[in-house]
Length: 479
Image (cartoon, rainbow, N blue to C red):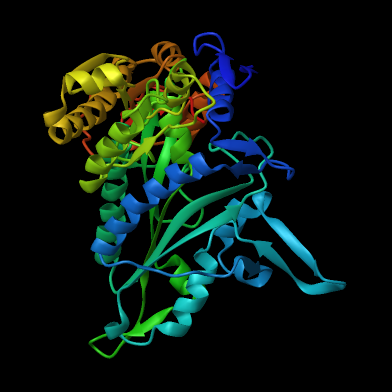
């Protein structure tokens, strides 16, 4: 367990010693979250919420660029609505929290605390759609959901968490499929270009697909302990929910047709992915694109004349070009403490400003990704800081990609598969039978992650049963 001494972090459990405890130490010491008085729930502290806001900004911009609008649906869902789509109900029933009393009155019908909002969106779509002219409807909502989890861990799996859930309806199956894949690509862009997390993109098996979906697609990331984390999903429902909720429209041909529907979402689980992909024994390492603070300026001997003024000048120049910057001018703390604090929080770039830097007209910096220090002429401030932030973003992605690739291997029998999933991803051929999927999970603890779009075979027989293979697929242990 991480220990504190007058605010200093004296120890974070090494990843090699206990990865789970390392994760807990980092999120608590960096003040991302705290435990809530409600079982299985977390309190997002300001710094943790700021990271979520950064992710929101990136995604919300992309959603609106692709024609989606934000809405908000009620938190409580009548039980009768959940019962309308049988497979959907069966998939979520064990996790639903119910409201049975309002004030002093027992409710005539139980109300589910939103585990997901397909049923609510479908109910409203059935009221709002009448003609082909109304389509498509492409809505998203930012909200919290509750799933009564038995085993919880902050960000990765909590009873309540924040997410976005998109729900769209279309005139044809082809349009719905195009939407499903478009949103999957937006999630890939978010993961790789903003979070610096390389992902495997592909389709889930029927066993692993979302309850009620025709097909589910996912992005799968590898954490530093070799386990997979499902970082985002996109679902094509076809007409299943439309038929259950009677969502029909009058086509151009004057016929009543069922709409085709999609759903897609990512959650605060992405913050856990960032921590477990990039973090180290000093704490977080945040990619500049989503770091709440991209540059922290630390005054050295700030009591001396001109030091704080120089910090302000540098900060204002950086802010003028949109760089998120903070001056740590707390006068009761040493520079050493501030260095440790900025590293714990994963701030990508630190600038140190003292009398010597002012005298020599230089900028002294520290990179959180490589732990390297350097300096350059103050006249190059804007250009060099932008270059450094871009380099840090690319370096974090490069490190994560190298790690994933080194821990991914092709396997051709159960012994090889079992050995490989102890350290990372196993890529194998699969016959497509759920019996083999179940056997692999039972014998190795690994699950199917997804079937990549590039289905170039690496063999002809199933890794489990030896029969003719149908699919190339990734297996791993997972969160």
